[in-house]
Image (tube, rainbow, N blue to C red):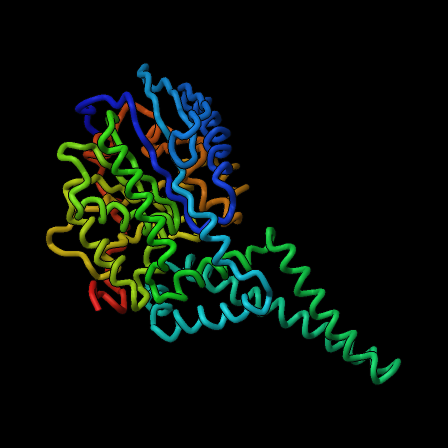
Amino acid sequence: MTEPTSMVKRRRVFYVPGYDPIHPRRYRELYRKEGAAQAEISGYDITLSAKAVGQGRYGWNVDAVIDGADVHTDMDVLYWSDIVRDSMASDIPSTYWQLLQTSWAYIGSGALWRLMKLRKGPVIAALYPIFMLLGQLALALGLGWLAYELGSMVHPVVGAPIGVVLVVMILRWFRAKDGKFFAYYLMHDYAYSARYGGENPEPLERRMAEFGDEIAAALSQDYDEVLVVGHSSGAHLSVSILSDLIRAGRVPEGARLAFLSLGQVVPMVSFLPRAYRLRADLRFLSESDAVTWVDVTAPGDGCAFALCDPVAVSGVATDAKRWPLVFSAAFTKSLSPARWKALRWRFFRLHFQYLCAFDNPLDYDYFQITAGPVSLSDRYHDRPPSRSRIETPVCPYPTVAP
């Protein structure tokens, strides 16, 4: 790492979440709690305050003293939780119909077999809701059949309604408890992209255009750095948003624009047959000198395509490729043995670890990146990529246009 060429005193951060139906205040509370924990571990100060009314979509202000430098950060969550909620099937039969459609989209296109050549973890995560939902259905039908048989022994007319009612009750119980199982949630997540073959639906495209306008406005203001953080499926949305901005000439010359992708699942979309826009944007952004792009994942995160270069594995890398810098957050080293033991089987929680405190932070610290005096470009200027990164192009559809 080199010494910074200029200190960051004012920063604007735009956080693009993944497929999340919950109000963005959860990210403020996560930042507040985990930022305080990291500050205590690493010996710096972070204070959060509310944004002024009308100042951005939703967010908070951060004032930090890190390495003796005072830094002010305006944080914004570019949320699309309302679109997520609208996309989630409200009834059980619709979810099972999504299951069939999504399974065919990945299996019939050949994407699933190619994805398995990269990382087994996220593929298992994708298969989990399918097997879990089928298991729930099998259990409900099995117990319903047993109730039918027992009821028929009492009276021939009684068995059938008792069996049907029990099946419905069991399926509704599983649906109500999905906060523990995550089967319905993950099914809706994968179905959202699969339904359109990798294309963005129109409501999402309109929202992404709005996000681009907000980022463009920040680039014209007096910030030392404008940082976009895309987490999970928010990473591939950010790729397209930033590509649109740069193509349209909306990034002023000399602007310090940075992009941090965390826990990305880009191949789950870019490997689908109609993901032309995303693949074209991946290629374009990877060649751009208007942005610094750093991609951080970790093999300990079973929901992400850890250390998979999203451009290279999608088959769209060219000789002009310069981004992203791919490296690992190294959960097994940056978390204490006790903490790793407590978290290693909590897959959904580990997928959010990038936004949390580390007991033994190495060269990745979310709060130093978002609230510290060093820009993303300077911080990782001399940082080599991880040697174990995966760059083999295995996408079955490496085309960028129909």
